[in-house]
Length: 89
Image (cartoon, rainbow, N blue to C red; front, side, top):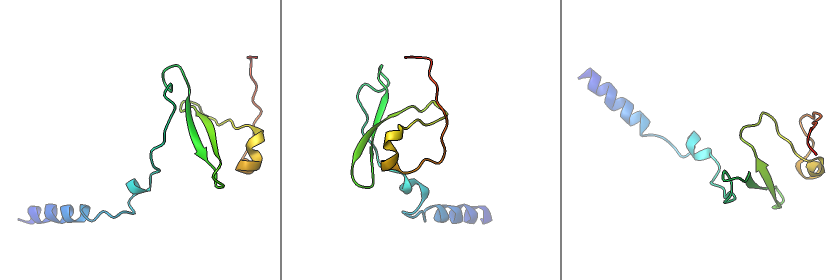
C-alpha cells in the first residue's frame, strides 16, 4: 500500500509541469535551404533586433565561429578575435 501511495504521489508531482519548464523555452522552428545536406551548406536566416535578416552558413561540426568584420557594427563587439589563415585561394 505504501509503495502504491509513493507511485501515485510521483505521478501527481510529474503532472504539475508548467509552461515555464525548459521544453517550452526552446526557440521555434526555422526554415532552411532545400539543398542543405545534399551538396549545399546549411543556411539559416538570423533576424537582428532591428528586424534586418541576414543569411548565415551554419557548420555544426566546427569548433569555432567565423563572422565577417563588416558585421561588427550590426552585431556588436566580439568577445574575442583570432587570426584565421587559409591555404586555399
